[in-house]
Picture 1 (cartoon, helix red, strand yellow):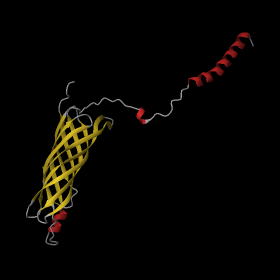
Picture 2 (cartoon, rainbow, N blue to C red):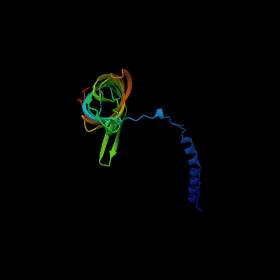
Picture 3 (cartoon, rainbow, N blue to C red):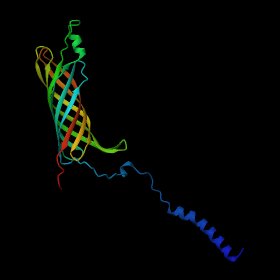
Picture 4 (tube, rainbow, N blue to C red):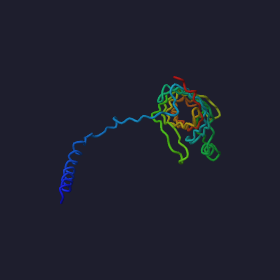
Length: 229
């Protein structure tokens, strides 16, 4: 073997021996990354902060076995930031007898349930929106949306279905959950499920009753222009 070849082989062996040591010296142990060490920075395309939101919704209270109540709701939101807003919901509707009620009051049974129909409500509270996200819709469109919970309180106006037609004004607590799907800079499609919990005084029996009005609504709302900073 020539002197040049011998030198080349020796040099190559030395490099092979040094490389693992260099690699070992450059390896850093980072440990386990905690969840609170990770932050995601995302620019919200459709901000709500410092904007008002006004809209109209249609819904139905369909879980009552005796009455089905189509209704319309007007909503107002004042968004303090991206998560919190003041919420006002005012609505009206009418409770119509179901087939079960009509069967029970028929001559066959002759028993008319002492039910109260929904007429109107006025609720004030807060909404909390912890989630803002986007999803790919069939590979053709990206939908931006948020998810919120709501807690409101107020009063509900109801009327007896019996011939006496007595009216009651019931204190109401209304938890709910919903989502906003942003259609653009201003327009929003909203879906909400809320459960109105009523405590009402009934005239005929002079007794207090607890009632639930579970309501599913679909609406179109509009945001005010973004404020310039």
